[in-house]
Image (tube, rainbow, N blue to C red):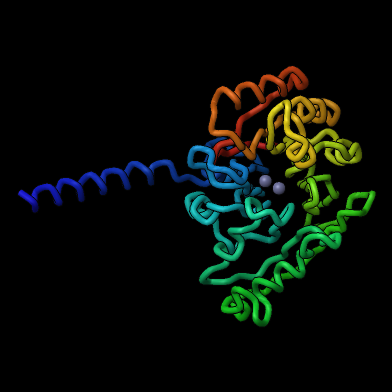
Length: 299
Ligand SMILES: [Zn+2]
Ligand SMILES: [Zn+2]
């Protein structure tokens, strides 16, 4: 009798694995895929949000995932579920060094290593700069020194104090720029990715108080925004995250064609609905609530 029970449990486990694998898909496999696409690898913020991974996005260009924006916890799982290949990644753009945006990066490099560019914020004397962050992980006596001989990382530092957007990377008709955005005491970079006439703005975590950001992402096809708090936040949250109504106003002012709402930070559907209502009152265009492995056609 004991043996029969064990066999049944094993059969059930096999069945559940088979169901899960059916949902794995690369953006590039989407019928009628556009030249530029975003696959959401993580749609949550720092807190548990119904199984979502923390913030991460893979930008496909001509069917290849070439730019990784953020690498929050859980990204290694979704990266592989997406069928992505680290050898194809030409730029890793970390918006800031909160763990829900950066903690999975060493896991992505393990065990095979890799060669790529890594962009991130300057330290502004309160956080490690991106160079220091990488050195603390992969340098001599770094936490993951074991990877040092397996990786070749070209570091690009985004000066978060610069008033004007800074160049991050240009390759062919791909142009990536960054601009410092206010996010409490965490030096943070918002990114704009232009590929030919297609454009994406990655707002990252920010409180929405830098008007230059709206100009920076003017007329983007897709604006990825990070919901981080409610419409009536505490002072601490208000310093970190824009209110939903402010995100809507920013998207309208930027004339964004499509807003991808991500960094879902509440497990409550009612609260998420409320936040989306405040956004809708202030932005009349297309809005999509991100989910892990979702593909967004840019252009
Ligand atoms: Zn975050
Ligand atoms: Zn953050």
